[in-house]
Length: 310
Image (cartoon, rainbow, N blue to C red; front, side, top):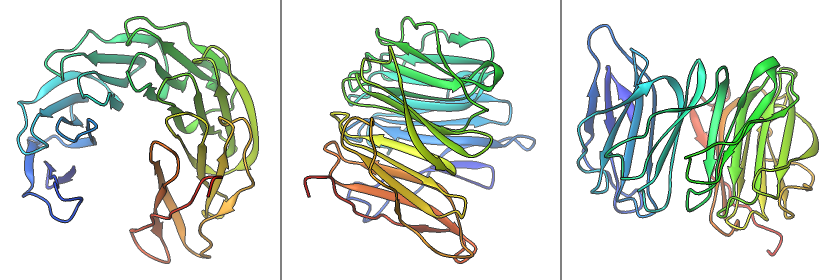
């Protein structure tokens, strides 16, 4: 999904990226408008596709495809807001969208986007939120920056119908928050860097009821975290003060981590926007980042790493 000349396009591949269909125009801005945020996700088979964006009027929009992204529904107006995050379950039936509209809100659908609930307000004031859910979407977590620059986490254990009062975690602001849970939702980890570029992490082994402080003793920006379906293998990447990519691994549900591995060492090159993904078993790890300076707008990766069994 991408924006070009005030138009939003998507394309799809059915041969593992070997070829793509002609671009589909999803949305066209009027002369005084623009598109500020975009994303696209699918269910486990790729058959159900959700394309989402924010227009110049701070309206979150959605279009749905039920045929692998070859045709899309009419535009669905979701809510007024920004900084959205969207997730779905393997079937694509259940959708959850967290977003900001001064307050932190969550809206959901249980019928493939045909209808949506009324937005649920988690807190009156907040920002920098992100969302994660168990495989069946029963356990859902939203973490965000709340009052006094502290982080807060709210959880639901009934498909987003009801939410617990947020837990609060002391912090000097929050930037680049990332959140992950395993397939059952029992193991929950989130990371962030504060205003001083200190990287912090919290981990839960009881469905978000309580969290341990994980002392990483690292500095940097853009931390990203992933876990396998069991929650045992946890992998963390971030950019250090020299903008080199760092990697650490845990084999005990994120409670302890191996020493950092430097994945890039290119003086004069600034790396940004890292991304990490893994398979369900945590065996195959792929890492991407954008290189600027030494190489302009180049995506480097993916690199293949292995778990402790290899």
